Length: 465
Image (cartoon, rainbow, N blue to C red):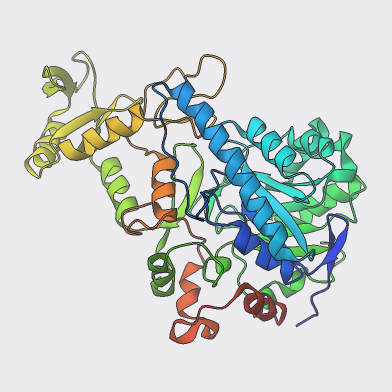
């Protein structure tokens, strides 16, 4: 394999290895500091990060506010305190080596005040901000304000071009790199557009070449492209190395760092990773963000799939073939469905899914009474963790509502990610993973359940494996 060359990231020469930033305590200051100490780039999550009491125990994020707006302000305060805490840990662990980045989602609730709060409170400790899940036009001016670099996550040249022309061209010197994240293979939220078929992955080479072509036009030849999503062995990406069409590159690893000594995830989660099989990761559209996302097809995802499958359209008045009455709600007011759909509904009800719930698309889903109560309670307890939430109809600005009905086909992402991050059963919570997760079970590096340190993982990656 061709040699892996150091790259300039944030003004410093580092190994071309970047820790992918997973949300809600899954990349911590400890893991980020270890990557930096190994001469690479560590990334801690600025999304609802943990902070600790005087005894070193995690402070639970319990909300006291009676309204969503009050809880949202608490969420912002939690986020700032946690982010500053993790930045300090990462800085101390790095020993002055490598680079420390923070990852945020542009579509997270309160992203701007949280960014400002963390960057102000941890001034000088963070070298760059990685940002995706949306179109982060303002990230350039925020980075400039704190004299750090910014790293947008895109899945196409069109997305980067829009960002460059509208915003980034005004702050070109702080663009530290462009992260190309494969929208089919990456874990977590993905950047698939409506024009792309989720069932037909595309070769990343032409897409990355197209990004570099535009970057050359914009005089960004020296800025590295950071390849993310689907990266396991770097030797499988050899055609991207020392390639004038592609230019300088680095590689971002999101899934592999989960299985390290410094990774903060639970032992149950690590054990589950070692057991994954090909096809166990499911690309879905259940997320309350509206984006596609990739997660392990566990009990949590299967329950959501069941909700979607137990779904029929309805009309509020008889029309067309929808003439059969079906009582809905505590008062049993009828809606109207087809005869065929009425038979389906009766079968679901007989099977215990006896609580129909209305969706914004004039359909009904059928769930158990217990699940219905849980869904409603989660919607009521919304703390505004997203800028726009399909599940609860929250919006973090203007009139604080999307103006649409809450959608019971989705879920409270804050609740489940907090739960899995803090030791709850991995089969009953959302378990994000890249589609290469099954390779833990096949890679001889992890034979007999071996869990490396971050330093050992970095050394291994640098060999091509």
